[in-house]
Image (cartoon, rainbow, N blue to C red; front, side, top):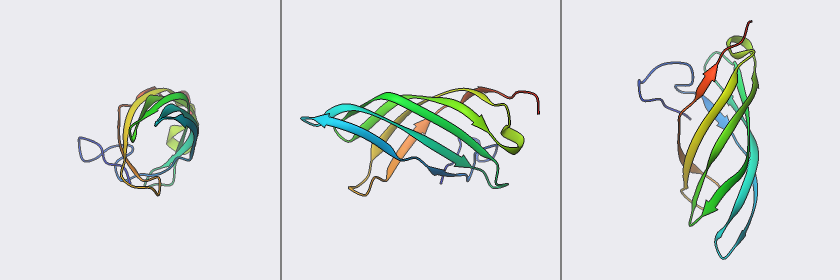
Length: 105
């Protein structure tokens, strides 16, 4: 579940599925993956990330916005992020800031 600072807006209360693959040596390495955000209207934003730094239970990188559906159709941009893993089940708390443009719909 995502929340934004304003308490409302495009991705407030959205769900996120974001599997990752990575390799670590001595607790540090790189990771990458794909993510899908789904807002409360059912519209999606799709992102990818590569070469995110994984170290000591944290993950930092930049998401590349690759597309969207519904009101997000034609979206482009980036979303820098920092995550802290909460447990061994892959759950994390992440902070990110979307920098985007919406294309013609």
